[in-house]
Length: 367
Image (cartoon, rainbow, N blue to C red; front, side, top):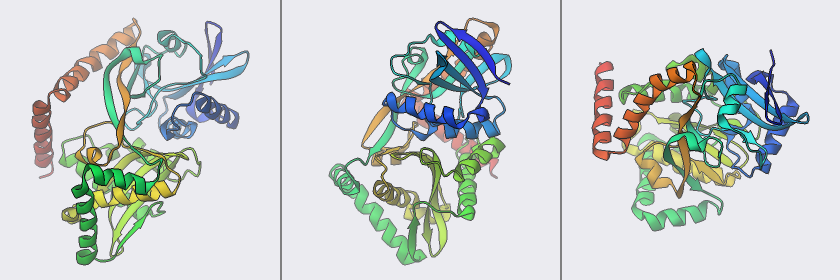
C-alpha cells in the first residue's frame, strides 16, 4: 500500500519496490542520465525491482514536485524503522537518484520514509546528501576500456609486462595439459552458473567468511537477474572452459557501458593454471568489443584487482542516524563492529593476521 509524506516543497510517495511501473522506470533513468552519474547497473530500477521480489522490506521513495518525479530513493526497511541501502551486502553502488540541483536534508528524507537510520557500504561519489555521514572513504578499483582493449593491454604491459606474459602463458599451458580452451562472454549455461555458486560458497567457507549463497534471497536474486533482458541492468555469465568443462566463471551485472564485477570463482583443481586471471583477461577483451567502457571491480582489497585496474573511484561506508530510539539501536548494534573493522583494515599487518585467522577458522569448519 502506498504511503505519503511531505518534505519542504516536495511530496513523497513510498512504494514497494515491485510496484514501480514503466513510467517510473523511464523517469528514473532520465533523471540518472541528467545527473551525469556513471550508468552503474546497481542503481538502475531493474536491480531495485529484483531485490523487491526477494526482500519484503524493499521500498522506493518517489519524490514529486508539482506531481512530477524529481527523485527516487531505494532502500530496505527493517525492525524499528532501521533502513539500509537496497541489496546491502551485494550491491556495489548505492544512493539516491535525484534531479540535478535538488537539495534535500538526509534526516528529513529518512523521517518522510519512517526510517530511524539508513546504512550504506558502497555509497557512490557525488551523493552530497549522504557523504557527510560517511565513516570511511574507500577505493574501488576500475578498468578503463574507453580506448579499446589493445590500448588497455599496452598500458598493462607497460606497467607490468611479466604479469600479462605469465597470464597468457598459463592459458597456453592449460590448453596443452587440460584440453582445448574456450571462452564464452555471455553464456546461457545453468550448469556453469550452479558450478560458479558452488565454487564461490566453498571459497567463502574456506576463507572464514559468510557464505552469501547460503542466503536464499541472494541465490534467488542472481537467478532473477540472470534472466533479465534489460540493456541497462542484466546479468552476464562469463565462462572459461577446458576440454568442454567449466574451470572458471564470473557472474556480473552490466548496463550499456558499465560492467560490475560481482561473483568470480574457479575450480581449485585447476588452480595451478590461474584460470581466474585467464578468465578476467578474456572478459576484459570481450567486454571492450561489446561496448563496455568501464569495468567496476568493486571495493575490497584483492591482489588481482591491483594487477588489472587502471584507476580507482571513491565509495563510502557509513550510516545516517536520526536521534530516535531506532537510530540508537542501530548505532549500538552496528557502529562498534564497524569501528573495529576500520581499525584492523587501516593496519596492514593486523589485517593480514585477521585474514589468516579467518582462513584457519574456515579450514577447521571444513574438516
